[in-house]
Length: 398
Image (cartoon, rainbow, N blue to C red; front, side):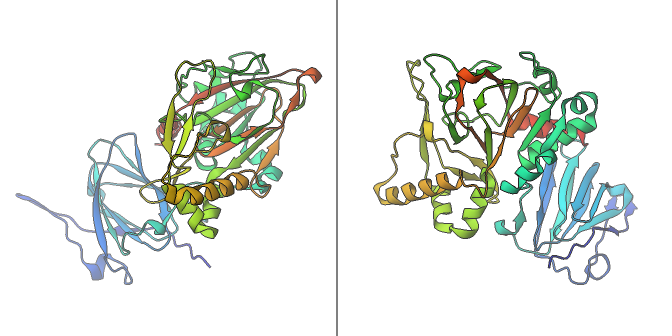
């Protein structure tokens, strides 16, 4: 059973003298009895950007301010609070394991010293992301938020941004249904990202389509624009009309599927992490075609999840080394099956005024086929970079 222990303020003394200031620390006085120093590091901050944004499974930390004003937000299963540290307050902060740490620096080059009682181990870090599976479908209201709540208050905007950042998915309800009207709520975050699709792009059945989204066919779960060097971070699909039979939406948490593979099918997971796949733009109206190589699962330096790249429609022929060809075929086939598995996938129907919002590099989306003769279906789509979401959330929560 996990034991949740709250953070604790540690007081220390300062001895100013004419030629400088002395701040001594004694292991038997300032440190907990079980704290045995294994490593330490100095962190220089950057104004308006957060650091840490993770928790530890085993490591306790003591954070000591060196320069400037430092704000630390701590959250755990049964505790949430903020601490303000600077040298003049003569306080350090002890943070036990399983406390979520987010650090904000007021000015550039504000700094702190962190003491750790556990060696550096990538596996010891806990991801900031809240993974989900098919059970979310029964509690879909937990990711829904009213359009008016976002427009009228920063608290509503923060709620929306936190859903997008931590869960990677949200549905905005009761937005206006006029064309381009989603700009109003999106501008509460930041500017949108332009692509060759235009902004907004039209998700509608058309003659001679150059993209499968512009048909009435079913779409397998996928991400948009995987052949980009940097695919859009977030996508917003604004439902204007959905009167046809069929056309129900699906979504799946790619991080949750990757986490399952890491825990249960390690060889397949490592293959998907280490072997790049080739994705290519297959638009027949384009004279030149862009392509990009990237693994299906990308990790951060701490081996947390960073990106999922998956799209059967735009995946090109494998051009990896013959020695790994069989392995990557097997791994990609397994990954594709899990990305459509009922254990992970949620299904729902968009109503006029819904804005389906999601992390394009984490949450894969799809739809069932629909009958255009039975009624009209029209969505408008927008993209936004991931930094805009995180930056706005950091600014509002300072």
